[in-house]
Image (tube, rainbow, N blue to C red; front, side):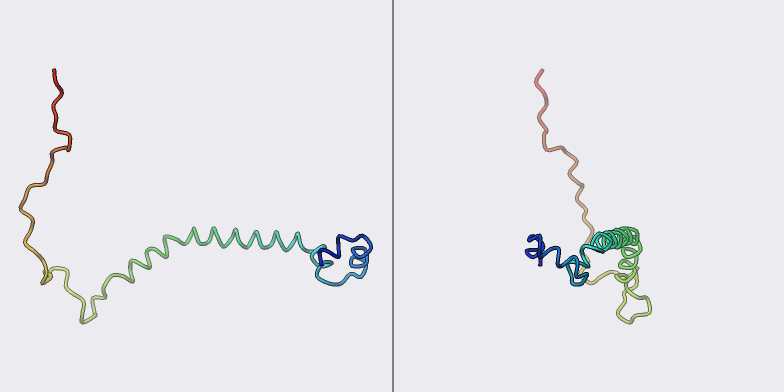
Length: 101
């Protein structure tokens, strides 16, 4: 179709016939492109705007249901819990050299 439009005589015939995809795109292509761009922009900003909603909803879905028979109480210790770490944390910096005077 576009090759037909390169030839002046054939392109003129297509435009004068006022039918076909080339004619329709010539008449409404810019409007179609701008409409698509607006819809894409609205969808993008809607997705960004509802990001917090979906994140909160995902966090609610991940929490166990209190009425569920398999839900553990928050005060119950897990059977695989190990004894608390009694070692003091290492607070020394990796570079312990003192500057020479």
